[in-house]
Amino acid sequence: MIKKIIITCLTLFMLSGCSITDEKPQIGDESEESEEIMDDINKSTFEHLYDLNDKYILENVYVIHMSDLKSNDEILLAVSLQGILAQNKASVYIINSGDASIYWLDSLNITYHTIDNVWDLLDMYIDEIPMSYVLYELNTESVNVATTLSGVERLLMVTVKIEDEAINHGLTLTRDVRDRDTRWVIENFKNSINFNAVATQPINNLANRDFIISQKGLILTHIQNDLEGYEDLIPDDTPMLGWGVDEVSDVEYLSTQGITTIASDHAWNISFLSQVKPTTFKQLKDDSIPQDLNKHFVSFIMTDGDNIQWLLGNDHFFDEKRYGNENRGDVPMGWTIAPLMYTLAPSALNAYYEHATLNDEMIGGPSGIGYINPDVYPSDALLINAKRTNDYYEALDLDYMTIIGSQNNFYNHTEVLDVYAQQS
Figure 1 (spheres, rainbow, N blue to C red):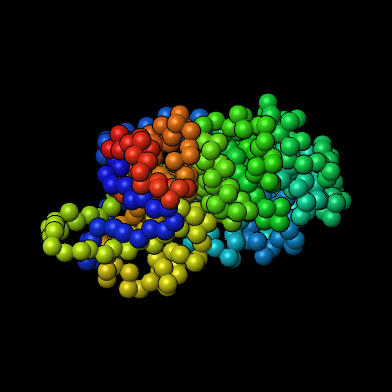
Figure 2 (spheres, rainbow, N blue to C red):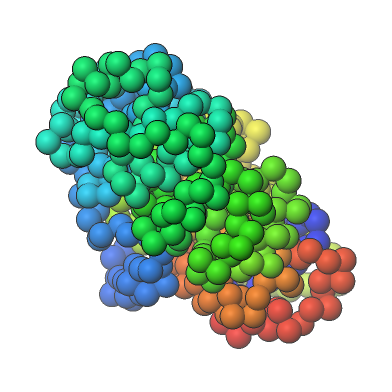
């Protein structure tokens, strides 16, 4: 339930105080009430968005290290294989030395096998996927076109550089999209694309693709240009994974279209982590602090927690300047998180709760379930957003939400705040 709303037009730092303790929250309390909350989320507020098939079974897992992939061409071949397999069952996990991926994998306590060659990995699944490929060119818009078609048509992503090797391993060419752009793929495949799963990604960024492939979704290159004339294809309050060119203008534009931004352009393995069953999330809370109207209280919040790759990376959970600081817990501190991680990477988010002290409080990042400017969000989409936000806050035991408005007088938009307040 949303209990308090924190508003800002630019930045934010405030939170209620807590006393100090070394206790850990009780994770895994499978109460009937908690099960009902999770069922409500999995079956209603997000069922129409992402097809996770309620599998939650991770077995026969194969892990490949990024360092064993000889080129970006091989990396995207592995990513496309990972995403295609995850349409049925997550089987492949890619270790990236630049993030905490090995930690999140080991924390699952599952058996996995390591393989050091992408072609050997491909050969293992020769009977499970169509042995077909889409030809594209790195660092061109065709990489995003190929990513979309990899999911929609279950095609492995291949460049000219590795095409001969692909053919030697039994792959056959289905499409050549080297001269195609994003608007072409929307126009020609709009009846096959899952517009509930949308992302935007720079053409030179290899991450944030496996999940969209697993969902048969769409990768955009130039947000506003690509969507012009196609805005109605995307349902109200759809999360846009990734990140655009300009934060202010892109978030503003997407907000006017009823689309919420989920910063995740450097996130890996979401197709895998999203198939981990969510647990019960419970925060330690001390409500015994008395009010003193004769004092001013100053509280501190670590912002930018709505950034999924930041929560998954080494530079937050393990960083001595942030959540990994050995003195964390000595003073009251609020930590913004991305509520959508309940669906996209619940086991990783759970680690933040497990290591929290009574002086650490998790807070929903802006603005609710995702980054929007609610004062320009269409009213119908805002109602959906507020309901989803409330459901996720219930599941994550969050009491505080942060909101970023697009206008200097956002504080006066009580009609917008009322939509959220009605959920409390």
